[in-house]
Amino acid sequence: MDFPSSEVAAVAHDPNCLFCKIIRREIASKKAYEDDAVYAFHDIAPQAPTHILLVPKEHIATLNDLDEAHEALVGKMLLAAGRLAAEAGISRSGYRCVFNCMSGAGQSVYHIHLHLLGGRPMGWPPG
Ligand code: 5GP
Ligand code: ZN
Image 1 (cartoon, rainbow, N blue to C red):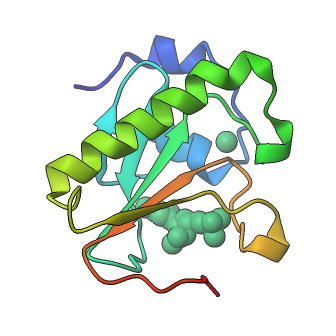
Image 2: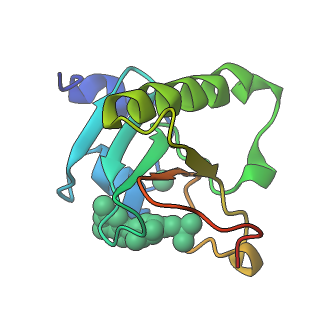
């Protein structure tokens, strides 16, 4: 289901942000899931057989910008990731949920996103 653009418009967005443009359908993406607060889509350069990005519809640049008001939102993102993992059939084989925060940790798009990765063995520690 596509949520009406009026709902997307109601949350804070940054017109220059790549993921805000994806959420607002200004840039195409392959949707995996959507609700009132969260949008999930397949990564354009998948690093595993399942590689889905879950983003809040609200523009939040980094994990450093979260506060108590976002508690439920972050919970929704994680619950949605678990459901998508089940749908992808990787609940038992295993999957990884990653937030990169700041360039030193690999963040390249400054709109928080949860990477859901699975479908292959994953090494630890990550690079
Ligand atoms: P980061 O490096 O910030 O943690 O992750 C950004 C992710 O966004 C990368 O895995 C990258 O492949 C993905 N990405 C960048 N641009 C696009 C795009 O235009 N569409 C999609 N679907 N994914 C993108
Ligand atoms: Zn954004």
